[in-house]
Structure formats: structure tokens, C-alpha cells
Image 1 (tube, helix red, strand yellow):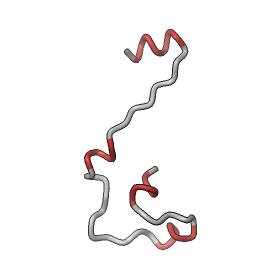
Image 2 (cartoon, one colour):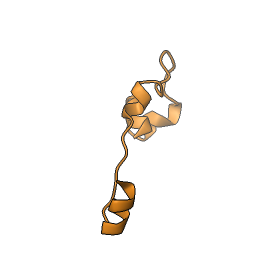
Image 3 (cartoon, helix red, strand yellow):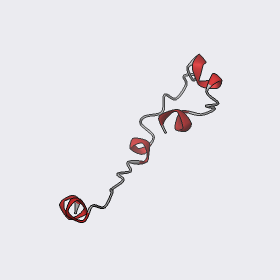
Image 4 (cartoon, helix red, strand yellow):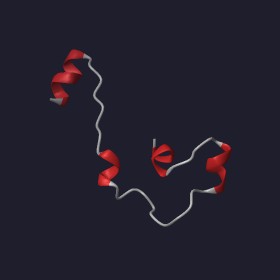
Length: 47
């Protein structure tokens, strides 16, 4: 499918749903700079 998209000049977006939640540092607070950037959750940080 990726080769067809390439041939057609179509963009492809891959989505792993945050690796089924494994990317979230559960139990850890966001870095201090995150609030300065308006980030309020780990999901926002990863996006």
C-alpha cells in the first residue's frame, strides 16, 4: 500500500495509538517546561 501511495503522490499517516498506552510515563509528572508550552497531559506532550 505504501508503494501505491508513493506512486500516486498520496500522503500516508501511520497511527499506533501511543503504542497502546506504553508511551505514557504513568506515575511521573510532566516535565516543568510542559506547562509553559500549554501542555497538560502526556498525550499532548507526545503529539
